[in-house]
Amino acid sequence: MPSLQTIKEIPFQYLQSVLHIEHQFIIMEESQAYSSINTSYVLDRYIVICIIERGSVVVSINGIQQYHIKEQGVIYHFPGQIFQVTEISSDYKAKYILMSKNFTEQLNIISRLDFALSLKANPFLPLNKDAMHSILTCYELYRGILQQYDNPNRLEMLRHITMAYFLNFNYYYHKHQQSVQSASREEEVAQHFLSLLNTHFKKNHNVRFYADKLCLTPKYMSWCVKRVTGCSAKECICQQLISYAQYMLRCPGTSVVLVSQELSFEDLPTFGKFFRLHAGLSPREYQKKVLASSVLSHPEKG
Image 1 (cartoon, rainbow, N blue to C red):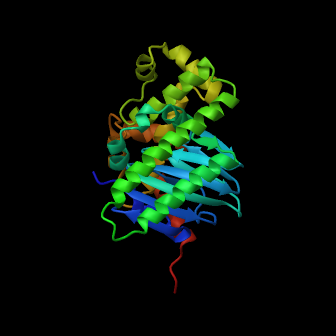
Image 2: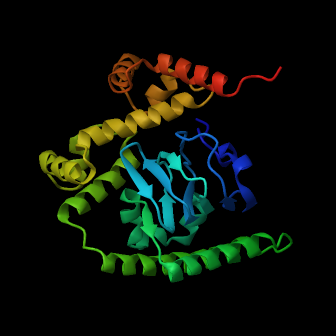
Image 3: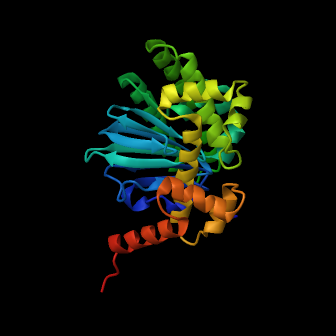
């Protein structure tokens, strides 16, 4: 099945200074609001690092939790996560670094660093002035390397800089963790559950699957998740499924059958019943509503 979301579908017209090499490593900037607030993005092949320099933004990850960000820092968006901007201030300014899964897997470092699991559950890390200066300096190094168009070693240079970036970021992550209260048992369980959910939700819809992975009873795991997120484990699973289903149904040319199969529903009627229960209308009715809204928002010029 072709990828539902590729880098070409990012709204480049609202971004500046886009530089990349073989679509494996991309940097870009943004100094104004998105054209379509509440539009969901899923980048299956990229880790996205958003460096917020000023302004405020409200983002939702996987339709489960919202994050109101009003300070400088970094947001991480991992492959497969459903990322949605619901509010953004007029003075918002950010820089973006996108690394393909192939690029990061060759580094073999992210899975060995402590921040990865935590940021999958809570994707924002505030940074002080010194930390921001360090991260932005790294960004400028990336820019300089990407602009050396005749340098055959650019990709290898980017790998070495990125190793240093992640090791440095891990240092700031630990400093931040030392300054805040250590995570409770409930928060640890919720973090692990949300990380597993992001990986397995398309194939596994049952709470017991995740509880077994964590060697916990479904009741205790769900209680921990409810304490941290405000939603039970089952509600989180349903919310992630419905968010991804809605995202797929908004992609032009995507059939309801394909969505049902992608999300491993037993058959089309089961998926239709699930979707109507959580979205308030059938999948085809949802597609028609989205299409009508798109036509109204982008009328043809006479």
